[in-house]
Image (cartoon, rainbow, N blue to C red; front, side):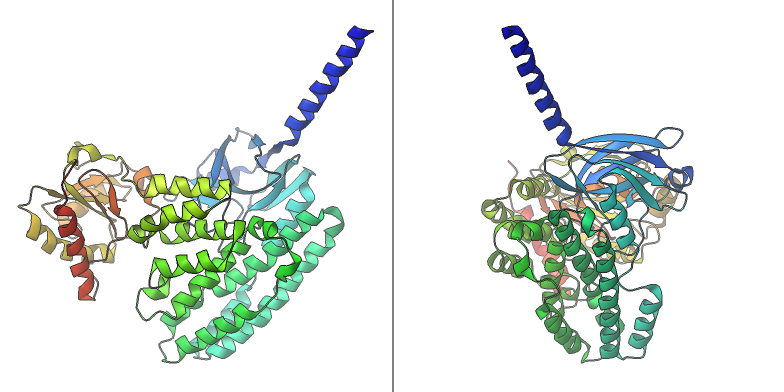
Length: 511
């Protein structure tokens, strides 16, 4: 009898352990049409678990093989009950960039799907990229796919809004876009409501927040671009007034949601950050400020003092993701402050990874036109200036003209070296451009990414999105900045600022 009792106890323990293990897993399997894999030139699906959804967010990737019939299977061990996952592929045919599969192009933020532990989802991706889901937990994914296909500003409405802008009717354009946004949000919420009986309150609330936040984000993000298209003196004032009235609206009644929901939502914190950044964009007095504000510290301190708890932790992470490539030196100065006040381990770990990768000099090893390999360690004890460029880049030609003056100034100084790195994929195109003298100088060491182009780890490490770009590396191999002032900018202070960085770091001793 005792033996039978032990067997029963062991069976219960084993069953409990199996169920716990099973509950922590998410199963994603399915089939992708060959038209899609051919389009991307890839036989590998990437399931990316996302903490944030802006274009600078990296996420935790799980690579999944796609067999010859288009089938795939993945088991994801979940560290949380709810996860947002993006379906992505490396586009081998176009710059090897990571792209959302089946993306509707109706969103500026990454399209991510809310999963729950215990989900066992079968996905079908047809030849047009349309996605459909079956299995345990599939209702919420089908609902999200349908929502993603309702654009906050449909093409015909976007065209009319543009016509009003072209006619210099800014107020009318903003009012029109607002009305369309309200109607499309109502449509999206009606779609969500039709699924409500199938969802827990937690799932419903998160999708509710996601709908409003992502749609509002897509409307306010382009505001800064209007200042480029309309040069009238009252344009900035009208946009400021619109932003102020918009920020006071309460489409989302915050008191109805726990802070944990607000932080967990894929898009709510992204919307908050965009609103805060827009304020600094629209009140900026500088030309560059309209892109990302006048200073990192203004935005950082606002987030730090205005928000609290886990939501503040996420906003601070987004701040560094979005702005570190524009303010690398300033953001580097404040990152330890951010890490010290953050309490959420998930966001803290992501920010720690950013600190490790983007604020350190990448240990590159690249070949020159003769096939000789040049590595970071080869230049220890020297100040390194690296220009990143590509053939056909007008700004790269402009930068080279000004850099040629700087190179001439320092060419006899053995403590400084000038490198260029091309993101051209075709080696013959790169070599021909070097010979032209338009993009590089005879005094620079010109390096090639061996056909990887913009997907090379050296480029990806600094998350460059535009060219030309530059970095300065110190004598001890540390990153000084990945966003120095452009010496070819119209404002002479940029040239002086670039020279000041060189002089300051040339005077530092190597260890």
